[in-house]
Length: 213
Length: 182
Image 1 (tube, rainbow over the protein chains, first blue to last red):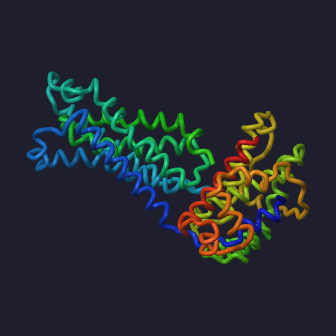
Image 2: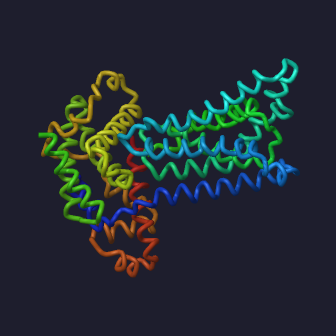
Image 3: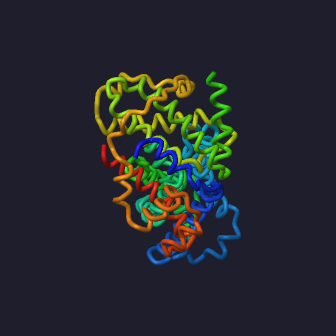
């Protein structure tokens, strides 16, 4: 088949492009992924017993807002770097902002605390397992987010893979908040951040393989 | 001149996205001329590969056409795809020449046009035969013979949505097969 025939093949019966297909794919992927994480979380870790009472506190929602903001930032970056020739630009700031906010809050809390209380604020009860729990809960969201990213056309595959990993892990972290008993921003700023970055690294590593087109 | 080319190509492409087959056909023809000129300058020592790459980029542009946003310059979008495929080509050939080829700004894509087709080394028609029936048949009936979705569905016994999905997946699988040949 020569190039003229290929052109005819591509243009015959070309139909109107469905511009909402991408958004639909991402909504599907995130819903399926989050549902998977939710099931995994309730089987492996269990919902925290005091969720009813803690849900009335501002700090619980602040904790939830952290990964939620990261996920929204990651989605905005994906919407740009998934399209050839577009730069993420200001969207990166939206990814960085929640991290900066949590670090500032954590630093202030540790700074105000007495010397004996500081370690507990940063290490909490669960610092040894927290990042790996988030990694585990990312297992359903990671392939789902990769699948959604494949509907776009990223040209920098490592970067795209990393942001996909971050989207997957931040979604998983939202779910993890329903279990995790830690209520100190200093804790989130270290261990949640590490937990969210691990899948991002895996995404950067596997991106060239999964996202090539 | 390349500014003219941008607005002319963009008008054709936008009409193509809305389903205008003639405009889309003209767009692909014009793009092909630009791609040949662009690639012949980039890989002058591998002219044999130019037509293969042209076809691969056309297929990539077609498969990614839903990612274009009309508020962005079309040239930048096209250039990013051409550059991505060219880099992929260099990587799979793992040659030192990738370091020497200037990959300059996107204005260059529309700077030179070349009308002369060369022979492609891979045969897309043959590759098509390796696709599973539910992808191959919709492509053959709809895209080669120009039948409608409804006619293709009746002929193949597939549902209309299966026909659309078959074409979509088939063209993606075709692009993957070309990639695998390198």
